[in-house]
Length: 88
Image (cartoon, rainbow, N blue to C red; front, side, top):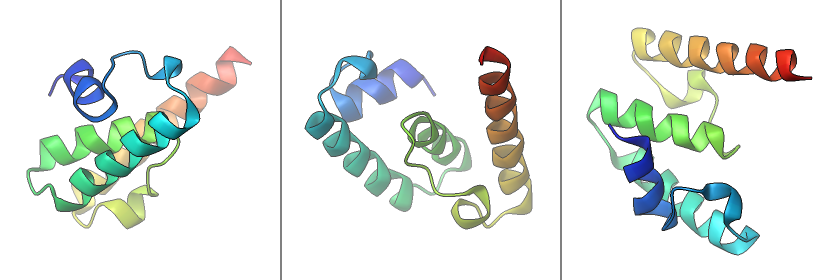
């Protein structure tokens, strides 16, 4: 799944950092709805990853019932946290 395509589809831009707070929240709302209804695991994970990037993703244990998907989300979130800590 193309993350730029997801960003453009839900937020109207590939540069989410340029959005005003209302446009950002509207995109998050659309993305959350799509995440909640998506059934294909790869697409669902990609939508969750974009939600995570915007600070609105549910915790992996709440977002994913399948243990493999949940573990992948936990690992992804952990790697991002480690990267953020290294940047500080």
